[in-house]
Image (cartoon, rainbow, N blue to C red):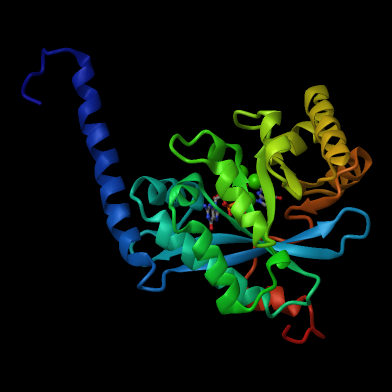
Length: 276
Ligand code: C2E
Ligand code: CA
Ligand code: CA
Ligand code: CA
């Protein structure tokens, strides 16, 4: 700026501008991504802790943009939420995941991430119902993953919406447990099937951080006494697997058992499966 002597805070302006510009460009590309077929889902196995049998997959969104390359969901999901694109994108993910799960054995579930903005939409429960009806997937094979943030979203009665989803027979998982504004009240008001223990605690425990070990132990005990299952996320090594088993988590998800993979690779794990 020509106001060179006007204080160093001026130096921030161009940077903010670039940031906003990058956001704007990404947002414009994201607006077109769905119709241009640039979005797809990767499926990461969730296995039983005791025998490492595949119990389900978590569907994770991927965006391959011709201009921007592979954009991380950690970047484009928040952008989609702010730009009010998460509704259509989330609904596409729900439908696509339900359709794909029909190619797996009837014991194998699919988990789909749902953000607070989606629950806020009065059409959400209908979208879930339609995805199930159109795919023919039995409701009990669908699990929706929400984080504690859904209960913080003002103007949404998340407990009521989740109650309607439960009434369809769909399962619920509480994702990233312990990383947000945890309140045990949610656990008594909403019947979650599974509590997902965030990777940060698994990493902490594998460094023998006493707090992480204590938190995992406490979450497992809490889940057990509430009749809920637990999934430990981000298990990368045999050591972590052994430790998590010792701490009593029921299910495991992590690179040790499989990275998020293509639908074809997921199907190939069940060579003898017939469509259900
Ligand atoms: P999340 O729901 O907590 O998903 C788990 C993340 O951990 C995924 O990252 C997964 O690839 C990663 N992960 C799994 N195992 C390991 C491991 O052993 N080591 C390491 N380092 N990472 C592991 P991803 O796919 O990058 O997704 C990031 C986040 O983006 C998700 O976190 C979720 O919050 C969001 N997200 C992804 N797909 C969707 C979607 O379809 N809808 C919504 N609303 N959010 C999504
Ligand atoms: Ca998740
Ligand atoms: Ca998680
Ligand atoms: Ca996470």
